[in-house]
Image (cartoon, rainbow, N blue to C red; front, side, top):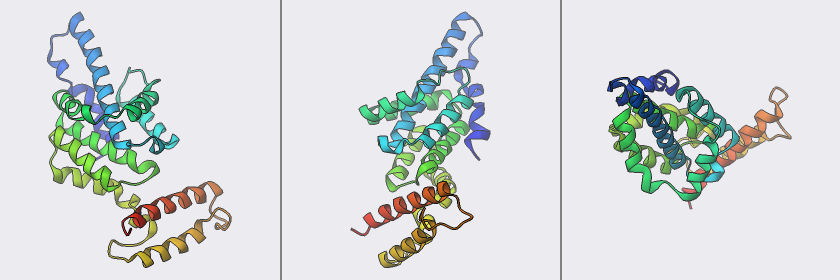
Length: 221
């Protein structure tokens, strides 16, 4: 399951489609589309959490999603709206935002929205424990079972978890994690990279290794 294949049908899910088609309902339909877009931006901001996590790569992923899945909506202000939410905070809006979405899109689309949010987190980093708690909270508000949310998170984070990045397991000691980190940084250091690895690839891998090591190190302090 992915948001590309499933969330694209969200427009067919809107409860507004049940109304009689007339001028009034067309206006309401457009307004509802805007409401859904705004609700999704609140969830995006909640999951990103901090401005420094809104990288160019993550921003492009968000723009791709909103452009494809919210046809006809104005995407020119999407990133600035997310930045605004990050500054002000969205926790007070979270529950009512999810309930609004739950009323207007299907359960399948809610699942795909959780998948999109999970994939978004893995674009430039990995899913942290804070992210897992937030995804489960959003899932509960959307009426999704904890088991379903956990399956989606696992599918997204498996290749992007800090343990996978550092080639270690949850049972390894800090010394083992540190040894693996040092070994891998030598392989991917921009100045010592393999000739088949581009400088851009090595830099990206090096940053991912450092982020993963910093995250796991904090668990031992």
